[in-house]
Image 1 (spheres, helix red, strand yellow):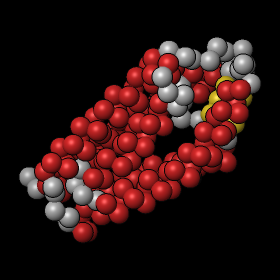
Image 2 (cartoon, rainbow, N blue to C red; image 1 turned 180 degrees about the horizontal axis):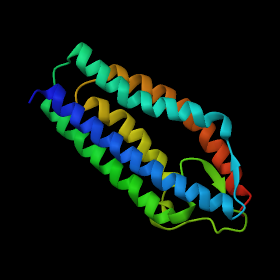
Image 3 (cartoon, rainbow, N blue to C red; image 1 turned 30 degrees about the horizontal axis):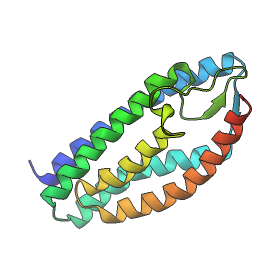
Length: 172
């Protein structure tokens, strides 16, 4: 199997993981809203969906069109970072439980979660997103996708974190 085909399998696996995340997110968002949850930051959410979909599609297009040479040491290191970022993401999901979703929905009166990875980092899920967004394309030396996603994601996260911090401040 070619390196491009193997990379496609990896990207499809990440895509399936994202579908699983969305299923958990929709269930949790419905629960939060039923509990009186208030959504913030709706304006940036569509851009986030497009950007994250673009990461997967862009990496595939770049790899199949440009056919960059795989650098084994880079590929293995980046694959390890992709796996670590997935582990961190699911640790965040497990720690937040019903409070986790892909939107910014805060249930009034809910306690702010300070356990798990939140004990050390205020936004560990975004660390996972940053690492994955850089590492996934670099598994197959798709530098263009890695750079474009990272730059756009940095701008998005600045907006997202402000919205999330403002919403979470209402819990205090």
